[in-house]
Figure 1 (cartoon, rainbow, N blue to C red):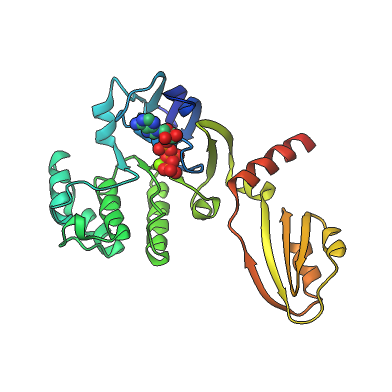
Figure 2: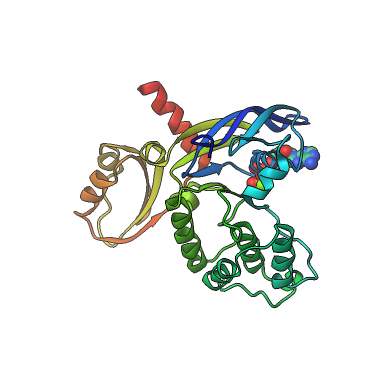
Length: 301
Ligand SMILES: Nc1ncnc2c1ncn2[C@@H]1O[C@H](COP(=O)(O)OP(=O)(O)OP(=O)(O)O)[C@@H](O)[C@H]1O
Ligand SMILES: [Mg+2]
């Protein structure tokens, strides 16, 4: 490879009008990393990926993949990249196997052993028409076609969303193998927790603009986590919990308490240990909360 940068974008913009689209994206993704691209609905994640694959043209700006220009060298890019679109629906009347055969032929053939191993690993149903498959099973066919030619770079639009926990585990181990081999993964998601176990770095996009790029561990240490604690007996005073290091807020609802905290959970856990804790539930991170706390942290630093 000509450089250690797998993807770079420079002022990449797709203006759909009305403030929608992607604006002035400058991003660098290093070879060999798993990079999580996060954002709420309509943030511009799929638009970015379509621009990278030259499925749509930019209003302005440019992108470089594996040392190639996304537009001038788009065919070479497609040869070397595996892409899972957000709505994988190719050829609904064909079976998974027929779709994979067809796409493999387009690529001038792929190693059947690699393809079969992927199908086994995901327990894909390749003998049924795509149109008849459940969302997750369709997604598996999409993943196999993205990985089967062993591309140097994988661009995956919400690969985890439709997968059940067992298949997610297979997917996670596949990602580790891929990056161990020096290949690069750029994947999108709505939630931090979904990419938490796989991503090295994360970017958060909002309304078409890049808000945050950081390592997952940095983001994790700054992000506010929310815990719902149930008590069998006495409930601690909210003021005592709020006085603990890292705790932002504690609210009591009967025998439960909602606690939000940043950084280590240790002070909270140790304080709770003095009580009869009947249940613990952690809530999904709110991306909005994450970048708010990110900026708050930035001001305090
Ligand atoms: N072809 C199009 N024409 C007009 N507007 C579009 C088009 N494609 C996308 N948009 C708009 O661009 C914005 C970004 O859309 P995009 O699909 O990239 O978001 P996303 O981050 O992938 O969201 P989701 O999480 O819902 O998949 C949205 O406001 C969307 O309505
Ligand atoms: Mg999308």
